[in-house]
Length: 201
Image (tube, rainbow, N blue to C red; front, side, top):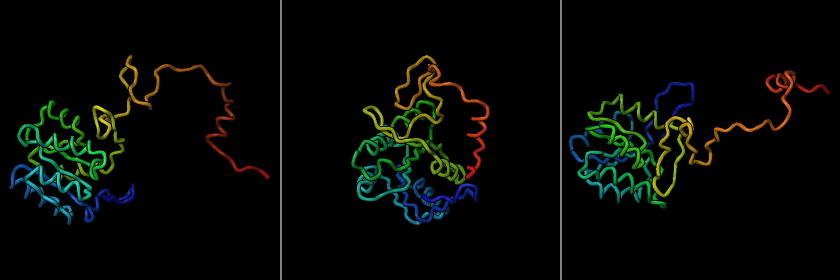
């Protein structure tokens, strides 16, 4: 997906985006397809079968994958998890939107834990979907790979570990503040760092 430079019109240019849509209902599949056509997307693959979608995902690179969370027995969530866990898979890092008719907290956690980037509640409106796609483009979260989870970092805010709990990630800072490593800078030295001047020859 391409986006205009920061500070310009925030609309996206989706004309070269390749989108995979997997829904368990033909009318919803058609509606989503029309919405993406309205966004300017020209390359859309639509499937009612998760098996067919999984097969094409092994052969085609997608810029965005939209999966129905309402397949029986949580099959849509399992599809996303398999996608993430294919170490040599071409779409394991692709952004995934999971759409669902019911979005209780338990379903949101389930979507997060299977590796989906975001959940969109049905009925879907073009504005909400477009806003979520814009959010995905601007998302700076790292991709996490571990024995228990693969997908975008589940933390949306980098506040570090909760107070009193040791961080599990290598970039989590210790809550303990160490002793000074050297003497404090004088105010003139601080000013020189913040307001550098050209050297006099």
